[in-house]
Image (cartoon, rainbow, N blue to C red):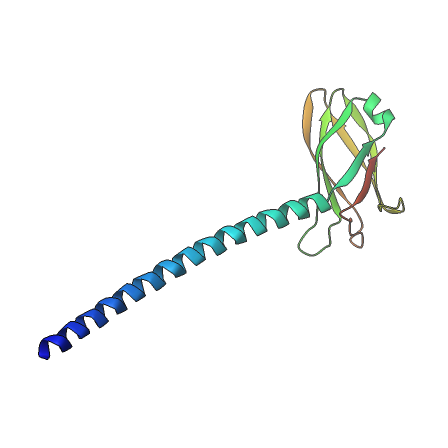
Length: 148
């Protein structure tokens, strides 16, 4: 009889350990699946945000004739303002020294911001230039940015 109790106790303890290990494995697998799904979700959201914050950038024919091109154009702001800064990577194919006017338009074509400033660059130079709009101008994610 003692032997039977000992055998039952050993089986019971052994099965508890097995159950504990199976639970741990299941939790780990679940965490792995959730982690992968979460990372795919974040990647999808960031791509969606990237696509939804695209503005068309139009450089006037006159500026193109002067040898000005743009690379990447970013929209940002300072800690105390909204997104009111257009940072443009300007590429100078010719010497240039003139006042540039940058305008922002809604997707519907309505102008809501304009700034002018002198820009100079030598042939084969390229650099970022900040165009700072009025602090009340919040540059939308979709629309058009023009340079003239």
